[in-house]
Each structure stands twice: as C-alpha cells, then as structure tokens.
Image 1 (cartoon, rainbow, N blue to C red):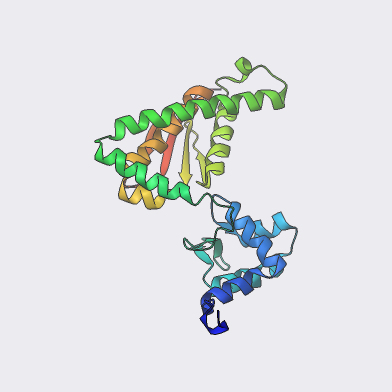
Image 2 (tube, rainbow, N blue to C red):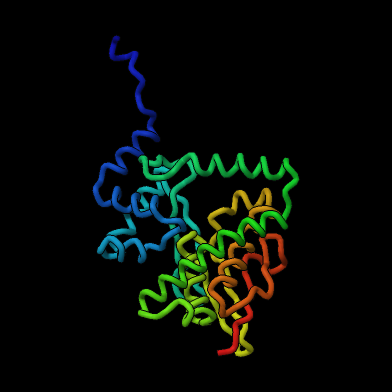
Length: 245
C-alpha cells in the first residue's frame, strides 16, 4: 500500500496525542479521568505532589487542544475565581472510563420513561440503594471507632459525615450548613448526572432523593425534611432534620 494511502491523524488528533505524550500531563489526565467530579488545580497538585504553578500550564495546554472543560467558581471574596477541570465529553477514555455506562444509562432512562415509571418508583429504587449505603457507612464507622454498630445507630455526626462522604464519592461535591434549630442543608455543588437530569428530572432527581432518604433511614440520626430537585426554586439541595443529641 503506498504511503500516501495510509490514514493520517488530523491536526487536532495529533495535537491531543502530543499533549498526552508528556508524563506530567498524562498523570494529570489520569487523575481527571478517575475523578467523579471536576477538580481544582490545588487538588490535582496535592494528589500528584506537585506545585500548583507546575500543574497550571499543563492544564492550560490540555484545554487548548480540546481535552478539558472548565467550570469557573466565584470565590465571593477578593481574588481570582477558582477553576475546576474535567474531561470533555469526547476526550479519549484511554481505557479507564466505562464508556458504555453513560450509553446504558441513557437507554435505561428512555426505557423507564417509555414504560411509564414515575417519581414514586424511582424514589423507591433509590431508597433501596441508600439503605445499603447507609448500613455500609455505619459498619465502617463502627470498625474505625472500635464500637458496635448499635451504639452508633442514630448518631447524628456519623450519619451526616457518612452521607457527605457517599455523596462526594458519587461526584456531587456536597457542602453542608447546619442551623441552630437542628436543620442541616446539604447542597450539591456538582451533579454527575446533570445531562440526564435535565431531560428526565422526575426520574433522575427522584433516584437521588430516594438514595438520600434510604441512607439516613439506615444510619439514623436524621430525616429528610425536604428534597429540592433540579426543577425546584432552590435546586439541588436537601434539608435534613437532625435528631437531638
């Protein structure tokens, strides 16, 4: 076959390959590929034991060739806004990401919608998983503290810390504020399922609601007072009524 007949990489594709040919950029790319949520420069630097000033130009280079998306997060104080980085939707997976999962999720969501499944069924399905997650968090906390699970059941601190850890692991980047009246508001700074939630919030947000409800019911120490889905006036947060100490 003549050399001219071989397929040649396009300029953008070649730029991507060159960008990932650097060892540091490749390591940064792997961290972003593994993360369920966008990462700030400082978080990447800390994980890789690098200085943020070393990481920053590498991130900019990957952004220039179309590998990364950037979310700008206002600080609310004097200083530059914080940037969070994630892989673009069409970035190469490098064999790390389960590329079939988003496709499967979209197909299953269409099947659920076409089958007439509504919020009630979705909440129940989410609650089942949340119960498992809550019981697991309780068992882990008991092992770490050297205590019996029964002794930690209903502990507000264990429940809240466990829920935040679980939501963070799922990619929701949660933040919590506790009021003097015993109400905790957990906000979801990032939704890993936002694309799906925007098309079918009645199913996706209800799954999330059930997950939270099931978790706190299994761990004890709190109850869901109100869940605010994507379509709510105050979206993407949950109000928890904490049990008295």
